Length: 63
Image 1: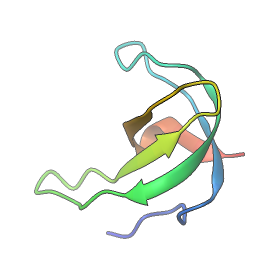
Image 2 (image 1 turned 45 degrees about the vertical axis):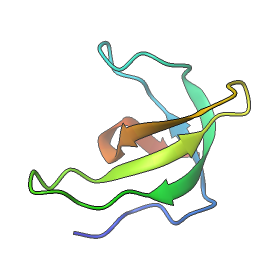
Image 3 (image 1 turned 120 degrees about the vertical axis):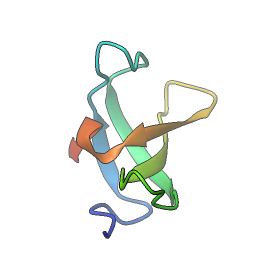
């Protein structure tokens, strides 16, 4: 499986009920390795937060 969003892409993070976090525009910082469960994960950075977070591709959409 391949990552849909390239590094450096501006995306919109839609946090799920359990995920928490600031919804809004973020930048893809890094692709995480695909594990056995086949979830596509990204490291993203929001300009409103001082840290990066790991999110599933299903929680992102093109900005």
